[in-house]
Length: 132
Image (cartoon, rainbow, N blue to C red; front, top):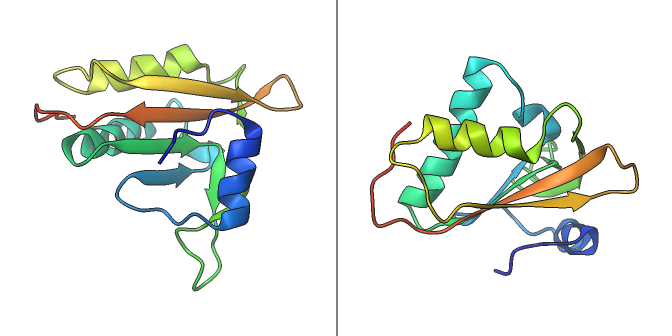
C-alpha cells in the first residue's frame, strides 16, 4: 500500500472503503490527546505495528460505528494542529517506545481549514522488539 500524502488519497481510501488490516489503522481526532492513557495508547499502537509487519496509522479518519461496517473508514475527522502538533505526536511516540523507532515518518496532510490536519504515521517493520 502506498502511503497517502494528499487529501485526495485519503478521500479515495474512504470512497473505496479500504478496510483496516494488519498494515492500516484509522483513528479519529479523539485518539490524540494529552492524557497519560491516550499517550500510552498511541505508543502501544505504533509499537505493535512496528513489531508486526509495519504499516500506516491515519489520525484524522473516523471508523464507522455502524454494525457490519466497523473497521471501514467513515469520514475525515480532522485533528486541530494548533492543539496537537506533528512535533507533539512524534515526541509522544519516541519518548514512550523503547528502543526508539528510527525509521518513523509522520506526514501531515493539510485541509481547507488551516487549523485542521490529518497525520499519517508511516511505520516500517522493525527487526527489534519495541516496548511501551
